[in-house]
Length: 211
Image (cartoon, rainbow, N blue to C red; front, top):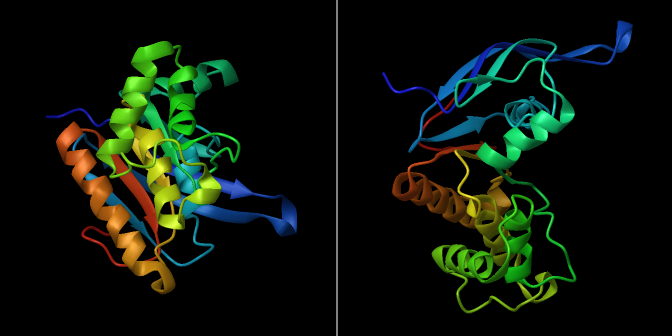
């Protein structure tokens, strides 16, 4: 049996205390394997971002177990969690989090800098990732000169640059932006299949698998 690249067992997350306490997650169980695209469905405020943050080792669950490549997250220090993220997890945030004073190529290279890959090989890898998402002709453009969809693709390229085991995409595909949302979903599905990594996307629109 294939070992899951990312696994959550009975994960609970409580926010606040006393009368203000909210149970954001109630015993979530999931298992992701490489090459799989999974969509997390639910309305705004249902806990999708909270779950993705726990899976990405940004938040700690109140109870339950999270494993990344078979390695249990509980008990690790902040530095150990940061190293785990660098080695195994790529993120795509709702706001893209691109640096406005850096070009598309430089924004992608940042993901390589943090794992110690620099120089010509890092630039070559960043360019390869941007070409892979269809932005080979936009390498030197700054975020202000890119459309929202293009900025989203730069964020995808940055997320896959360090060849993570899993990519977590915290993005909405609301009706007003369904065409672009589905295009990115198709892009993530292709990358997961071709590069044999797992992808999980938080969404608010229909998709091939519901969790």
